Length: 468
Image 1 (cartoon, one colour):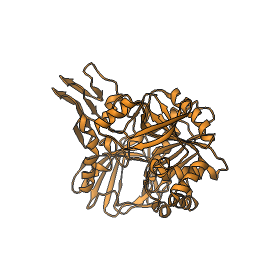
Image 2 (image 1 turned 30 degrees about the vertical axis):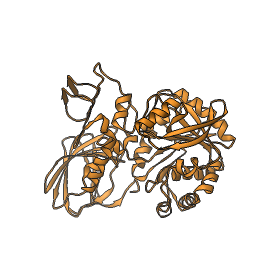
Image 3 (image 1 turned 90 degrees about the horizontal axis):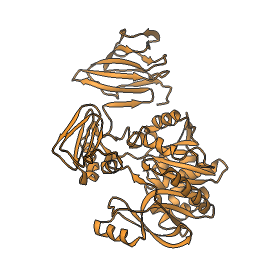
Image 4 (image 1 turned 90 degrees about the vertical axis):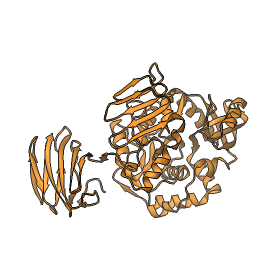
């Protein structure tokens, strides 16, 4: 059996301002109608002998991951929640431990959730071949046949061929400078490191025990002390925090004597930067990728993305411009790898734009701040059909709700009130309250907050169906 393990725990800082910590790139639709996570799952459909995926993600993103899988009618093998990011080796270790605990010893197909692959069948053919090698005890990494001297990827050096299409894994090398990348390309002995792997659960766990025993010890304890939480498995935070943060490449693949590399040419791109989205996007006659309401005059070779307003570009070239409700990025296409440094600066300044969007997603729906002042704030709140907010109170603010569309049930100190369009209610400071959508269409309402303090941490939850 092949058990797909989808690594969906990244933060995607190089795709700021669209990708942010609370709603990162793997949850976004960046290269089609589906999110990157959904696209990863979809390209596995039809893979014979494959189980439902095991998804490893940050606990903050759990409801978004579950909802996106539900939309696809996918019941996952498990959704494992990491209390903090620890790179790929601990994620693989946890997946192997979870799989073996079910009494099976499947072949793990490890896939990052941020790849763009045009040849789905090519990936599936490689997985079937990789399964054969994995059953023989090999640890396989998939290397991509390079077409350009790319300096943004790590490389893998092929060793001797030991089976048709497969090679001994000789060496991992870091991202090279341009002259070195050109030498790698010319030699024909190097492949791009894709971050995709296949190995039996028992084999990779044995190799982790041999080469990184501290990872296995911490992960086993995190699983043993972990607990089921709704549709999720929550790793125990104390044990997992003691796990070293290291990639599976460094922890095992560089050290094992059982490594193999299988070259792929499947139209692969790592959607980790705005340059990669320009490379993979559909271009106009001037080689521009235009997303949203964009107008150009004498503009070439640029990536222009608008989400809220009309974006116009005149007489520019080789730019990336991304407009969102609360931030605009302007960068040279050759410098987009440095966008992550902008996020680092914003974090140091404790700017909210580094963490969340103006539209904030919650398991029950979303809210978006429309206007904010010193003592009042206006929000647009959207509640999904059948969803409800937590039962809560505030110590520093009162709220006034006005229904724009749909039907609401408002609870105030135990009293339930049904509200329809154009009806409203007032929630005084300190009153226990809850909002629920009993209908079949989204509930939209305007919330006007007033008080001395309007921060989101002024919430005391008394009951919550989402276990927050």
